[in-house]
Length: 297
Image 1 (cartoon, rainbow, N blue to C red):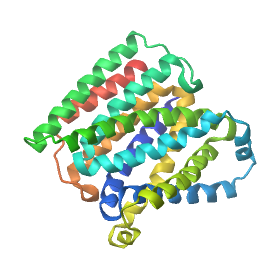
Image 2: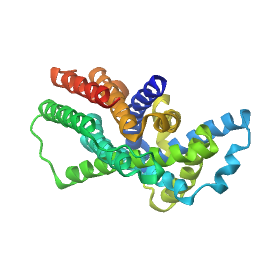
Image 3: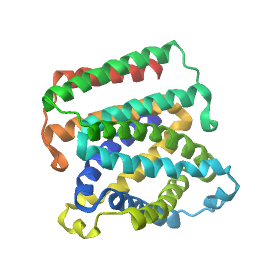
Image 4: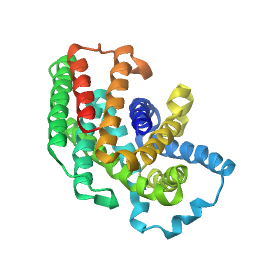
């Protein structure tokens, strides 16, 4: 169980890195184009892996309930929404709001057994964890506003906050659906399906709605082109960890990883992000999140 938890936290760290690099890359080539690049790279990497380890389990995909195949909609939706939100409201703010969406959706999924997941009632321990998480988010939000100074929250910015909230809920739904799919066809096979099908979906979106250009790739660091690899690691960690931990614990683990790496990215200005110091409020928020994790672990 501890291995599953550490894997999930690593997935959260990788997800935070992906948000930062994708937000930067999208400024050069476009939001949909960045998402398509991510999915194509992920499909290629997993395709090579499955060729080396082929055992035929992927063919079982024709036997699974069809609803399990719609996780690709949530996966691509998350990526596109975060790519749109990060350049407008920043890495930390986007992740804070997405975290709220993740947690709300994950507790609902566990409590009602949505998408065939194991039912885990919302008891007093989860209520206590929720209070700690709310306190952590308040600390992060106030610190973000203090660092950024007075802001004029335009209608466009408020809309981006809503996009980030929706994106976070998509993560919980995606992880649950692919963990169920992975039970039948395998962990890496489930991830491959996501990236393969997502590539086709995003190709159509780019074809009809894309406004960017892939020519901007040449002007970006190679770090920004690894979004597909980051996505593979993140999704595989979910498919591996959720059946053991449940959606609620898994999402809190993801959140902890996201917040840790988001703080480091902005503290050191990695990936071209504006520098912001690691404040006492952020440390308190992180401690509260770890407390919530311990509370329901």
